[in-house]
Image (cartoon, rainbow, N blue to C red):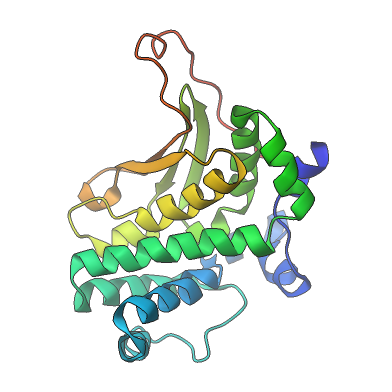
Length: 239
């Protein structure tokens, strides 16, 4: 699986120029995110609230028209999140972002992970498959996390990842966990490639005062007596 580890995600030629910076260029681009942060969120807004709301809120957020297909400055996504929570009920805004996360995960599955890699991950033992997948997500995390710091590590029942600060949660400031966009995006990938029973939940959130948003990935619950005896593994490798 060395090939899979090195090339789990692929880029088309246009994306490769903007989303695969060298070390010297990385700092200049970390404030950019993938276009699906906008495309999938606007699509979910249109589906749930209707085209009128999608046009109105896109204009209020100052989104480009048409929506870009290349990497975009992260402030566009922050503006859109802010407008969602200003103009919609909190539950509606949360639902839109959760649906956007699912849409983003599905897009990555269809267009960014080669078929032979998808097959290889499904054939591996679940924990090894999750480690490989998280390593790939970690290398490409800035495409959805922007300037946020992303970490990931294996745990006895699966894994956890953190964001600091989470772009969505800091912007929403709703006084409750707001990371469903990230949880649903990662859960979509893990369920498709590692375990269909996997769950991703947000256990700490910057919107409620935490220093980092912390997400737990559970593959299958361990017996209660086993969790004391299973050591936590090291942080996932990034290469």
